[in-house]
Image (cartoon, rainbow, N blue to C red; front, top):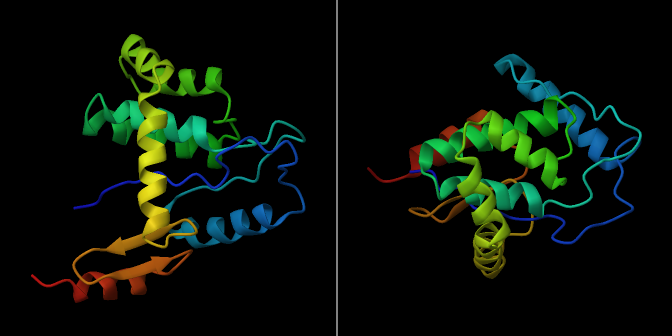
Amino acid sequence: MLEHRAFPLRPAPDPTASFKGTYREQAWLRCGEMAKPDGIAFNPWRHAEHYPNWSLPGLEAAKCAALQGTEAFDRLHLRLYRAFFTESRNIADLSEVVKIAGEANLDAERFLADYRGGAGRDAVVKDYTEAAEEGVRSIPTVIFPETGRALVGLVDLAQYRAAIEEVPR
């Protein structure tokens, strides 16, 4: 069973965060090349400004969607990724996140009540604290609890298959 946990790389706003000419752009291009055969598009951030300067709003939104059920989480999770990596939408901006939640057909009133009430933030902080205690320092990190094996960073499909095969049946 796959369990998604939030791990904010920038838990507080960083006004200096940028894209063009940075390691972020290089990583985005590498991810794009690896994902292309699967039909997944990583389009370089197309705005000179408004690069998301922290990760908490999007992560909180996903946690609020999860309160509406697994299907709601799955819809919003995928929409947030597409919005950021393909459409260059700022998922650090609450008004943009609310639009994306609407596109994912969430119960808008409940979503906003949960978001404004801090339910998402509490869940993100819990995930982050537990991950840090387990030694997680970067994303993605995929941990296979049955074997203790961790895949860190951008790894190829063969490594995932090998890790899955190690899991006792």
